[in-house]
Image 1 (cartoon, one colour):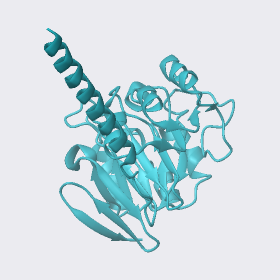
Image 2: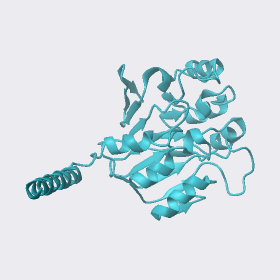
Image 3: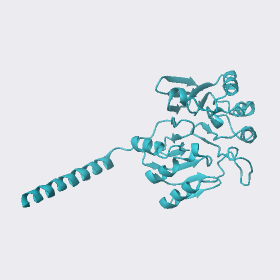
Image 4: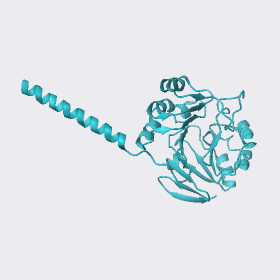
Amino acid sequence: LGALGMLAALLLGLRRWWLGLAVGAACLLPTRSAPDVPRVTFLDVGQGDAALVELPDGRRILVDGGASATQVASWLRRTRVRHLDLVVSSHAERDHEGGLPEVLRSVRVDELWATEPSDALREAAADRGVPIVGTDASWLSPDPGDQGSANDLSVVLALGGVLFTGDIDEEAELRVAARTDPLPVLKVPHHGSRTSSSDALLDAVQPRLAIVSVGRDNPYHHPHDDVLSRLASDGVTVVRTDEEGTVVVEVAPHELRVRTRQRHVVIPR
């Protein structure tokens, strides 16, 4: 028994040593490097939104977190993203906010922007000491005191050459169209619902590329044919996550570099 006990203790010690070595090695792994130009990764999260914006100065911003509680957090860990300067919840619907509580618990986050965060997101922010900003002057929409549906009160902002639009529909699009400058990339509002991507918005933004974050065979029939027709009429290249999976866009001064699992495309600006 004494020999067996010594063997067990030895094995336990070896196990702890290997675990410690593994943890130490993980800590030494290099973090994800900053890009030379703004890089935006639109994650394939099904019928939902999630995008990571990486800027040349090293800042990283996550806009929305999809519906799954763990998918985006797991992707961040897998791609060695350990710190986010900012997390944005466009609005408190599960297909946009569902994964954000786990993100806050999994990586270091400096600040959370959200107009009406869910109880789960508030709790995660409180647990991790992440301050919540409910209104910011850099938003294009909504304004303080605005009334309307959760969709039309989505946070809209421009980051890295992309206009992020949440789920806004026509009324909010008119407000945004009056304020935005032209931008090369449009995250198509509300997954391409029929009343989104109005002529007014497209005329104001003048995008070269439109990203549709949408689920395969979704019951809403997004994106609507009318939306695709408007984009085609304006000569906008459309890339859909339901068809091509995760989309990586590099916003260079004179071109957009688009990578999916199916193709690499360069679009002049």
